Image 1 (cartoon, rainbow, N blue to C red):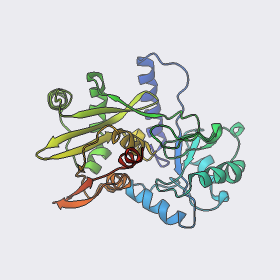
Image 2 (cartoon, one colour):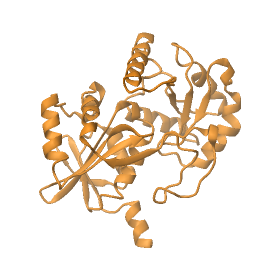
Image 3 (cartoon, one colour):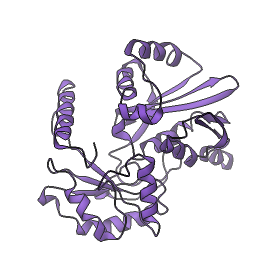
Amino acid sequence: MFPDTPTPGVRRARRLIDEGRAATGRGGPHHVVVHLLDPTGADAAARLHADLAAEGLDSVPDRGVAGDAGSVPRPCSGSWRPGPAPSCCQPAGDEPGPEGFVRFAVEEARPRVPSASAGRDCQWGLPHSIPMTEFETKGPEMGGESTWGAEPGAVGLREAVDADLETFLAYEHDPEAVRRSRFPPRERDAFLTHWRTRVLGNPDCLVRTVTVDGEVAGNIVSWSAGDRRFIGYWLGRAYWARGIGSRALGLFLREERTRPLYADPFSSNTASVRLLRRHGFEDAGTDGEQVLLALRTSAADEEDAVS
């Protein structure tokens, strides 16, 4: 859902969420959080536009803000018409100064946002959506990455199991995901057969389920094709534009140590291409409308070399 999702669409989504929670025996309220990109710095407006364009959201109103602290309250407090919803402001994926962003958010912007007593709250998160209401700085963890806060949106990887496949199937059939990836979704029987025999049943494949707070968010897989090793990934739309893919990819690259490691997204899937390049993948050629990227060394490799 986005800030311009019509009221019936939001209500239908909430109904589906409630049905799913009831089916799994989960009680209590389920909060919908509005994520707003809020890059800082002199080139904030240009970086905001680039991030939104990469996600196909540049035409969506109030999806992000760029400017001084006074620009934050309006979209944070009034973007969703169907009712109050907490908001989470987050920096762009290439935020040059995370600590500066935290100071800006906590000391300058937050005091200007209407309080929760008005029916809404506004929080701030780093790329993996950490709310700043519990702000503290921690030392390096997760293999040397710095994190902030109590990580209510903790990203993890675990072995993929058969029970994950129905969720993977639903994600693969999401129309927007199909449009961006340009990958034709398989029918259910073909999908399950492919995954059970050629992915989960193939000892050459390294398969991990991406989790966020224990929920299945998607998958990352590596496999061999000829003399090359490839990587691919798929996240559910609810987990896009929150830094989850970047965090998960970083964790996966600590397990999959084959170098060079290749990826071949369609060039039009700019969000995926940018994500791979941020993790050190470099151009290695083209194949029609696909771009071939190769990772020859990663941050994890360099850390291992130093240690």
